[in-house]
Structures are given as C-alpha cells and as structure tokens.
Length: 125
Image 1: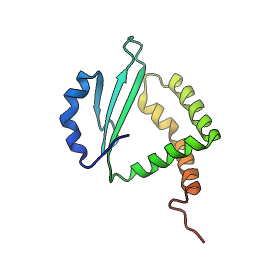
Image 2 (image 1 turned 135 degrees about the vertical axis):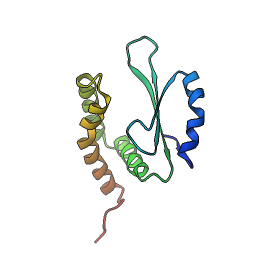
Image 3 (image 1 turned 90 degrees about the horizontal axis):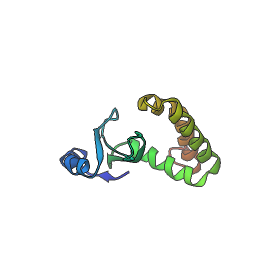
Image 4 (image 1 turned 120 degrees about the horizontal axis):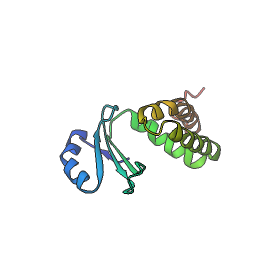
C-alpha cells in the first residue's frame, strides 16, 4: 500500500501501469484511492497482484495499517480472515464489490482488536 502526498498525481502513471500488465481501476468505489490489478496471464481471471495507493493523510490509512500489523501477530484473526477470504472468493467470484462488502464485519472486528492491542484510539482510565 504505497502512500503518496498527492493522490491525483498517480493518474499520470496509468499508461505505465497498463504497459506493465495492470488493469487501471481508479478509485474503484473508494474515494482517495488508486487501485491497480494484475491478472494471472492464463485467462482464468485470477488476480496475482493488487496495488492500493492512498494519499498519506487519508484517514483510512491508519486503520488499514493497524489491520495489517495485527493479523501479522494474531494467528487466530489471520486464520479467520484467510478462511473467510477463501470462502467469499468462491461465493462472489464474479462480484468483487459483494466480496468486499461481505468481509466488512470481520475486518471491522479485527480493526477494533488491533486498536485495543496497540492502544490506538482507546481511552485510558
């Protein structure tokens, strides 16, 4: 997840990303993001790489990094997330928005755990 100072400047690299084999998706439903997808090359439709680029002051970035850091250290949450992703990828194979929406509840729960674990946004008494 690269972070940049000015997200709009990323658009000038769209041709380069396409030449490198990426599908340019723009914001793709998430304001302030630039999203690029690279597919397997075997016509299966399977993705091999996803690049999400955000402006560094985007308020979502903090939660995404907390999520990433937490699933790296919490084996149970990592397994829950992985298992759900596998299940949903089969269920919503051709519906990426449905896939993303179906992960929302678990992702929110994991972010809440991460906030508590890293004491971010938690009032100390």
